[in-house]
Image 1: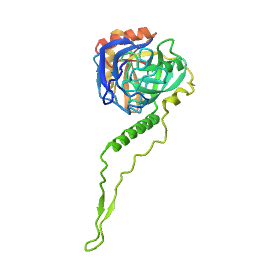
Image 2 (image 1 turned 90 degrees about the vertical axis):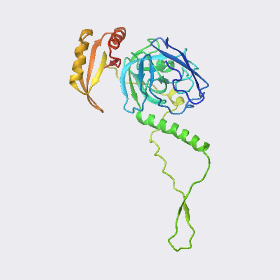
Image 3 (image 1 turned 180 degrees about the vertical axis):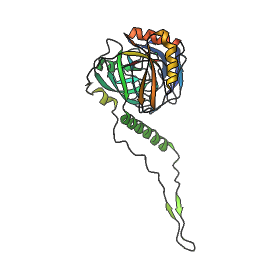
Image 4 (image 1 turned 60 degrees about the vertical axis):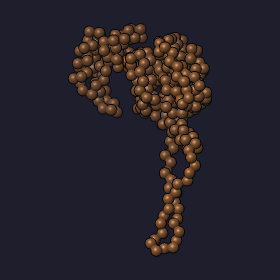
Length: 313
């Protein structure tokens, strides 16, 4: 788990040895701490962040309002309670929040536990997890509401709530812009319209103002609203775990990778149509349980395929 990878101004970043520590009963990650961060929710504003490297792996934060991924979730709590998150807020294990490696902070996502059908709206305000085999690290309260605290991990689907996330970004960016305007020198700049030639009429001043950006029609839930939300329950379907080693626009590239992985298990190529176009996915599996999936994933990564991941279908 990374605390304060990109802290706000005046934040002192302390890298705690860049070592792996146990984040909870279900996962681990690199641990960073910060001091003198913002002590209130949304105190650090909206942050995307620059590319960063953990454990030899590069991560590229970005706005991705089409984000939709399945995989394994873990949770974190007591070891980080009261410390600062990657965007400078104070982590409260009893808030409905989460850590994600690349989504903007904060973002609003829906996390669905595919094992029991429980589904929850969660606010992302931290970076992590940095174990290869996890896609999101939930706060302890989020894990409790999703019914996965005791197990430590769960098969999940994580979907960004695009309109709510855009509304949250708009609200926080507006606060930042208002603060910048308030701090700027208060000099009035105005233009004048000139009278016709020969006229004795004085020039008329005009003030041009750019139209404000349109306000989102959807409002983003705040932490207090997320804390009291009802847990949605959706039908549960049987799922299987796979190791996805890569996805390609060209079939011949996928075929070469499939052949290279054939010695590690049953490799297959599946075709899927996405918003980015048709992709050919190379997968190993299905895998019987999480321990076996973790072991196979590490084997694939160590063989030279660092983008491999666990997916759930």
